[in-house]
Length: 117
Image 1 (cartoon, rainbow, N blue to C red):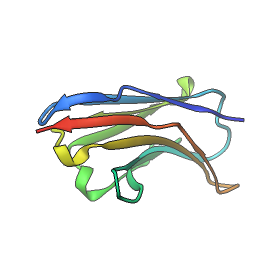
Image 2: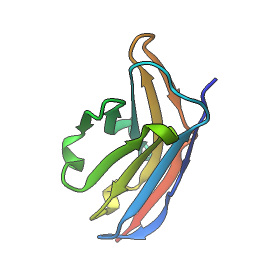
Image 3: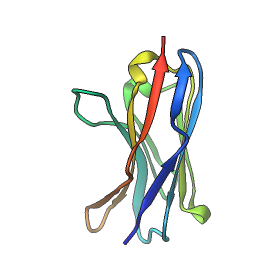
C-alpha cells in the first residue's frame, strides 16, 4: 500500500511563495502521474497540476505561470513551487498519484495553505 505524505503548507502573505512536497512511501511502479489538487471551503476539489513519470506536465489555467510542478522519481517525490500567491489560493492541497493501467488513485492527507491579504 502506497502512502503519500505532504509537507510545506502554511501561512503566507499575498505575493509570497511556498513549496509543497509529497513523498510516496514506496516505489510507484508502472506508468503514472503524480500531482496536486486543492479544495477550498465550500468548493469542490480541483486540479492544480500533474506530472507524469515521463515528465509531461498539466496545469489548471489559473495556475499557469505562477505554479511549477516537478518530480524526482528516484526519491518518489513530487514538488509544487507556488509563487505570487493570492488569497484565493487558500485551500487544503492534496497530493495524488494516479496509476494509468489500473486507474487507481492514491491520496495524501492534505496540507493547509493559507494566503492572507
